[in-house]
Length: 115
Length: 114
Image (cartoon, rainbow over all chains, first blue to last red; front, side):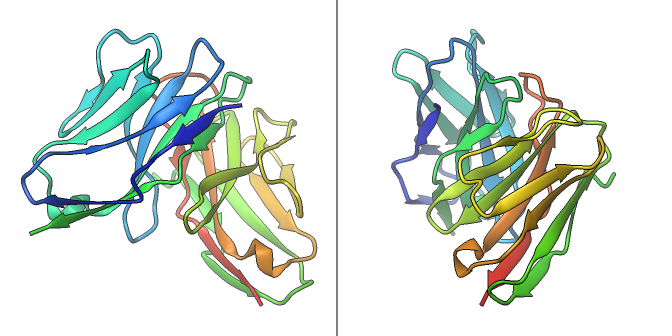
């Protein structure tokens, strides 16, 4: 079974600064994907970034980058130049190799951006 | 561009009542999922359907049933609601294969059982 651990229940960051949200994972599958989702106070789940286990380079999407350290089983999200609109819950997730690739989520980190 | 549509958005039930949460996607996705979100718990998988005609239990299936009516629709039924089922329910769909496609989520149903 897959497991995702997010050890930071809450984080604060100053506007325009960078912030790293931690995620470690545990899976026995040799091939897997790692995802980050953002959930603002309005409640919708917004897909941010994906990293495949065999991808050679760390994924980047605009201000989001994923610091993937396979040997340490970590997939930290880095948000550069934080904006007030980045205040939200952030969830790390991994898919399983059981055929339907259902996601297993961590408990999330609440990020608050301070003006 | 509807994506994944869930109905209703809000619902209050009395203990013991039944109801069905509806979910439909228009992206021709193969796989569909039902999750529940409780404070401090993240999202937990209730049931999923890898393809039309198949359903499987997830992490927390007790008290729920599902129906994959066709490729577009995947419903979640509470036969006898309990206060422990108070939660926010999300339906999601995906291509059903590994890749950077992401999973598309509905906007959620906030259910309160009193």
